[in-house]
Image (cartoon, rainbow, N blue to C red; front, side):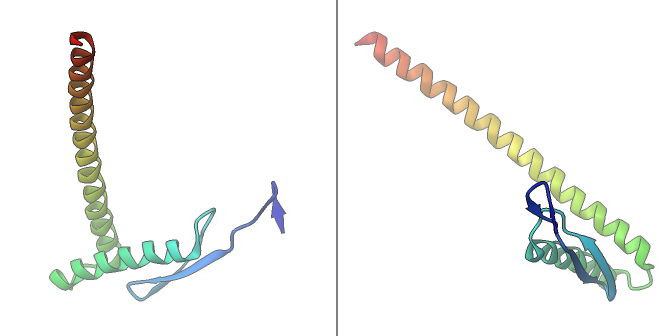
Length: 103
């Protein structure tokens, strides 16, 4: 079946912490969705290893918060790196302009 000239994505069935989830893959590849689920499963299991009495729903929220924290830190690192690149680019452009005008 096609929609707007593209094949519709099939659902992906994954297991996270012993529970089965059927996910709509959208445009994502099945392998990518499976990698995401494996990452979430790994994070939940690592929290469970430290706090085995925490119920699944709380483990899921804690894992989501940990993953969001990772994302925010990476975004901050990316923003910082981008600022450094911009500053170095500005210095290089200035140095090149100075060289061109002094010749």
